[in-house]
Length: 107
Image (cartoon, rainbow, N blue to C red):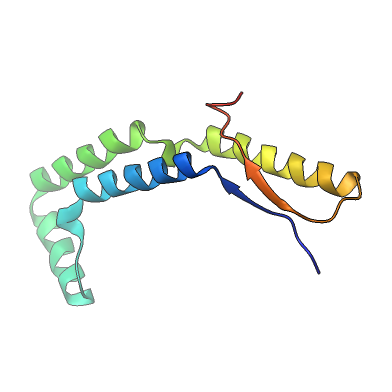
């Protein structure tokens, strides 16, 4: 069975990766290497509410400005991809690779 496939244009994908990395960097103190370290970190944050509050504020600050968490934008891009796939099927064309242009850059 053949399927259409789609992707986000490279520049947006690179930007989303950058944003994801920035959020990770803001929270890099929470990255651990084992379950034991995870438990230790959870206990540490539970016992240190100020540190937990700073961490939450950092995540919120990055999240609020991040296209990674822009659900309406993601939905519009997904709808655009679905429309392109439908148009391809409706025109009885062979499935093809579809490039979805980001709605913010190409309304």
